Structures are given as structure tokens and as C-alpha cells.
Length: 135
Image 1: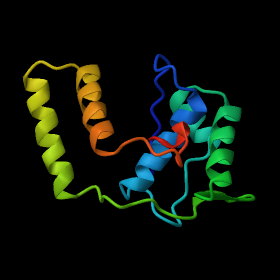
Image 2: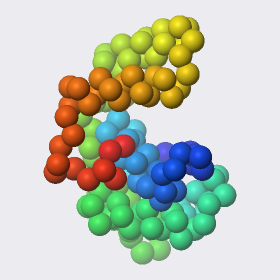
Image 3: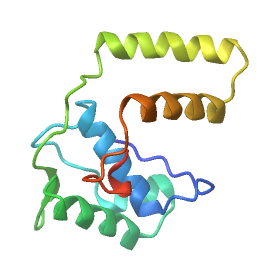
Image 4: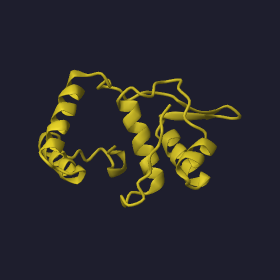
């Protein structure tokens, strides 16, 4: 099950953080079709956010066809986005690089800026994807 982490200082709307984290879990294969998302009550208990925020995020995911609400049962994953499994050799390389960056004294924001710069260089922004789709 996915555990949501809300960063109130990020400037990103809380519901979008839930959407992005769910998509990231789908891409990494941590969530697969048939898996149940945490209930709004569980997310609220873990994050102290408004239940309507969770429901808004789940509605957005449903609108995108990624999940489906089953009345009385919960919200379930309809389709995955996994193309890079969590145990990928690329992930191991990235973890090694992140360890080296930390050892070199880089902060999280420094690493994020470097990674984003390289990502943008190799994967130019695609006009077909909305900014909210970047997870």
C-alpha cells in the first residue's frame, strides 16, 4: 500500500501531491492493477489533511482512468504505469549516484536541480503532457 507524504512547503497543491505520488507508485510497480488505495480516512489519519482533498485527488486519478471507485469497497487501481520496475539496475545506479551526491555535500534541492537539468536535456518537455502529469 502507498503511504502519502505531504510537503506543505512545496508550493504544490496537496491533492496534486497525492496524484503525483500515486502515479510514481504506479510507474515504479509499487501499485498494480487490482490494488486498493488507502481509504480517505486512512490518508487523513496519516497526513492530517482534509478528507475532501483526498477525494479530489482520487477523483482526478479516476478521471484519468488510473483508478476506479467501487461503492462500499474503496478505490482500486485500474491500470499500471510501470515501465521501470523498482528493482531495475537503473534504480541501483541512481541510488549509488545519490549516495555519492550526499557524500559530496549536496543538499536535496541541489540534487533535484541537477537531476531536473539532465532530465530536461534528455527528455525535452512534451506538449502532450500537462504539468500536473509530471510526477
